[in-house]
Image 1 (cartoon, rainbow, N blue to C red):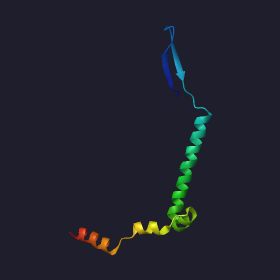
Image 2: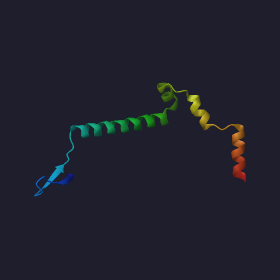
Image 3: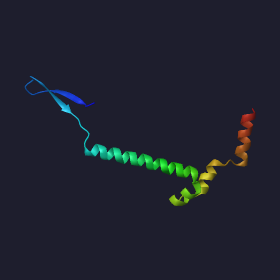
Image 4: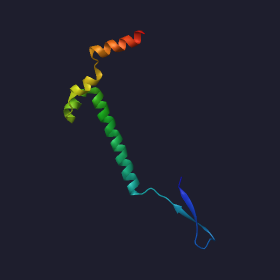
Length: 85
């Protein structure tokens, strides 16, 4: 479906249409966007399967990630008290 935008001509006797087409730049940006989405999905899946290796590859300290996931003794007792009441 082609997008057409009608304009009135300068002599006001006929309508002039602006027709938009997808050129080379559109397909270049589409291919780049598709590549970036696929690459991000691959990185996401690799991070799920191999978290330690991905941390080492990207130079991230893996202990910072594990600290967010583990509860301290006091946090555990606090959450347990909330659930029991």
